Length: 260
Length: 260
Image (tube, rainbow over all chains, first blue to last red):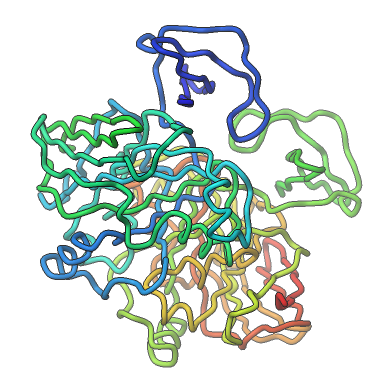
């Protein structure tokens, strides 16, 4: 099942994608819902990112090659973690499929996209076992964890490096039926394939991350955990179009401009 | 004006404190609201923390002595920042005045409270000047930015060190009429004064932090910025009661237990 969130002015409404249509519901997939009976063509519906998380976590540096690139080539401040060790992102940075990534005027050119699997929590959980962890997941969506890597180095904190407005494209929907081992992540810039890898080869897998986190942190319906990116993709700049596809879920495509 | 948020089951309702009473409103202070006409005794109303932020920022290491303590005595990983450089916190950790701080079972004893002024944003803002910044603030509340300092050192990220469940007491209300320079912060453990300082002596002041942040980040109504703590207060442990007071706003009091 694919959950989308339609937006009209300030009003958002959840719906289920059924072939070319969206069947709208009252409520949300994070609680009670029922079909309203209203359907519209998917192509005619403006979608926003499929959830506004209460808590927004990211298990960064979660693929072997990406770690090496960051550490060797970009002067990451510390070696990779020995256990799940998520960082945080901020909702101000979220945009939807199709919306424009705006590079801040004073950012250097070292702005890179990162294609990531996004875990969307469906049920409140604390102290969940690895065996039960995936049962707490509603579904999965696609994220682009854009970073300005000079700021990653120069700043103590990742606020503007990772959380400048528009730096977190997410969508287009939450797919609830996913074969994790069959997923393939692809990053394209202007239609050219820049990165392709099997998605479920993280250093810390989804179940391990959820089990470790929930020893300390309650995860609530609608919370998200971004699962990190592989390798390193070239810079994006004004006029580019960047696409993150996860085969088995969907894709998000966002044009890039530089603020003047 | 003091804004409180009452909770009854899963329903929250905003109200205005008027002497011993709460006058309830429909809507919220972050948008349109009007009085419903209902009032109740403040003492009979269960309050929750006064806002669930969309984005939750903290300008840490923002007082001179605190920086020295962290850097010299606790092995902070890097020197203090040269410009505002906020980190992030997570909503899962928020609790209200009176609720219990639960130290995770496997946390070492090195758990410390930190009394902080919390800025609550009232109006959407981007690229705001220092001169205009304070006009975007709805009001101020009181936070306790509890940290487990061994994890601050051992982990790359601050997720469990700063964001374990219950590590972010906040409240009791949002005070909209504040004379920043008159505020005094006090931290008490079991009634004994452990720290007292003038609040508005931050390294990076509120207007500077908002102006710097909004060059990159849109702040939305309900977002919060915690402003950092001064000095260092002794550990809290099972059976303690910790109180953060900011004279001119209010105080929050939370008992402490250790999970078994």
